[in-house]
Image (cartoon, rainbow, N blue to C red; front, side, top):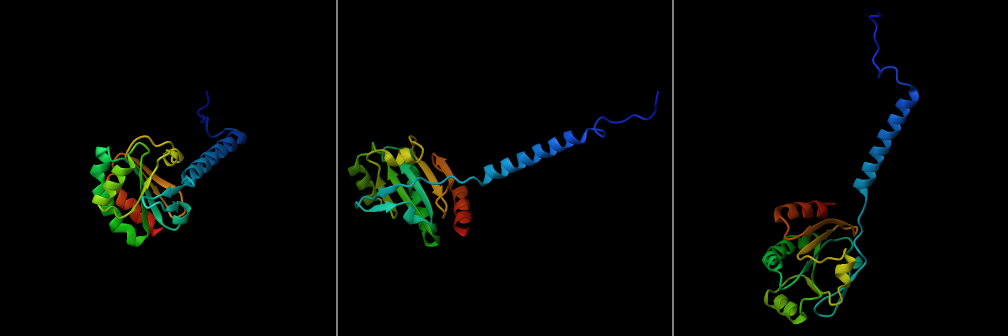
Length: 176
């Protein structure tokens, strides 16, 4: 018996090592591509309560929050003062905000809420449900999208966001 034993890994054929290297490179490329994949926001136009049209494309160069909400949604009403505070904190740094009332929300309720609370951002009606459908068929409220300066969705919140985390995200997006 020989005292000289060899490990199975030290004498693997070259082609096995090459295949392993190719697999590692392919996985690395896949991960890199997945992480850098952009998620463009839909090309939509909002109609605000004054009847003015605002295209999402016209807001490029700004960070935009699109918040789907309803006056009948207690979580939406509960988060709205913090949404107002967030908008007021960041609007001077390039944040824009569109609050989109769901199609089932009576327009007079939305108008009354926006007026009595003096909402400082754009409020739009989604009377035909096309905006919610364009953003991935939003059904749950509140749902908020954060869109970067290039028009890509960088975060989707379903339910009220954790505002400290949201503010960190906005700081980063606005600095980019």
